[in-house]
Image 1 (spheres, helix red, strand yellow):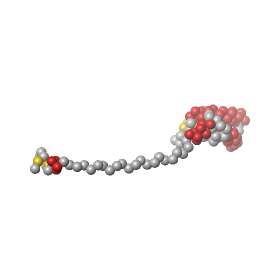
Image 2: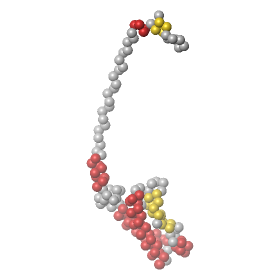
Image 3: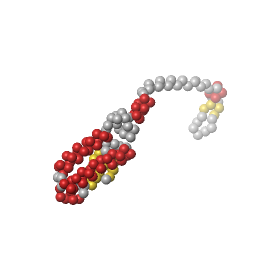
Length: 149
């Protein structure tokens, strides 16, 4: 049983198929199912639930030699039941993706849309600078010192 995270940041469970089922009944090398979450803690809980279902079905397939088509139909039905528990609408802090959580209700109350603040007033124009008459007669050349006239 493996918990993997793909490039879309969603966690998946990956369970290898027993070799005898691969060779004799044409099963794939592994079963990989989405856990429908991007949160590791929640994915770990869901992984244990789904892996238990898959291992139970593998044991049944080994003892009864169930063909892969029948196994896949039963697996899909069992996974649908488990996933329905994942997306239940009950308020539950352990399930942040449920549609009605205590945390989301509290966050919605805190994050009401606030009006945008008024724009800051334009800065005042710079005051006029007056030059003293004694400095008005000074001329400077780039390579020499000031010359007073």
